[in-house]
Length: 325
Image (cartoon, rainbow, N blue to C red; front, side):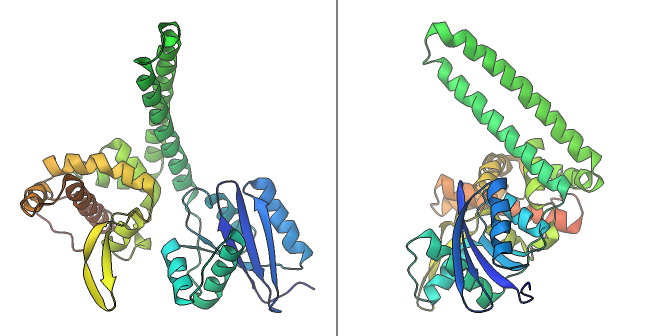
């Protein structure tokens, strides 16, 4: 007879494998490791069936692309799924005075966190958003490949330079093709098309950044505030605290999507020059002795606040309007 009480499944995931810690209603623990691919997912299902487990509350850390496929698979198999910010897991471990030394212990810690704090359940993004994200990532990969080949030209022997030139031309064609596919994909989706117009109204946001932003947070209602969105992007300032006293705000936390931060870097520099909402920021921070990178980080945060305000209000950017977020 299948267990009607939900078991808890803690998952520690990496690029090639994932470790699981299954806490059964009986109190017993089961541990196993699987490859991080479709075959591994199916073996996990088979293992759960052998243990007579019909449904679990599966909990994993938000690890960018490594856990997406598994989370979607478990959701489709009718498991409850929670995807949690790693800082929450770390804080829980510290509160429990635990020192984690291996992946098996990490998975058990995540399961205990899941049982104790009952994090919000996760739902997959709409198919159109997932497809857009895949195309945006592919575009970035092709652009990086082209730049690598350009860098090789000056240091390569003449005998291979012709081949490198040909490869660059091929990459440029593929880049143009996928840019067209991204544009068509957005324009064919009424919601994405509407948000595209809103984002492009912001000085500093171009077509590439717009597509990246849409692929990550088109569902802006999931974020309670612009500060939450900044934390998700990893551009919120880190606070230094001793006891109950906050000592000050440091540089960006960099906890969040590195892909998003990279995508916002150049737009922030452009916005500092051309966006009326950011023009005074550089001068003000420079007078305080802030470094170039600190100023750009502040511009990225400000840009996130503007993006949040535009998408949340469903109104294009207006330099005379202050978005309270």
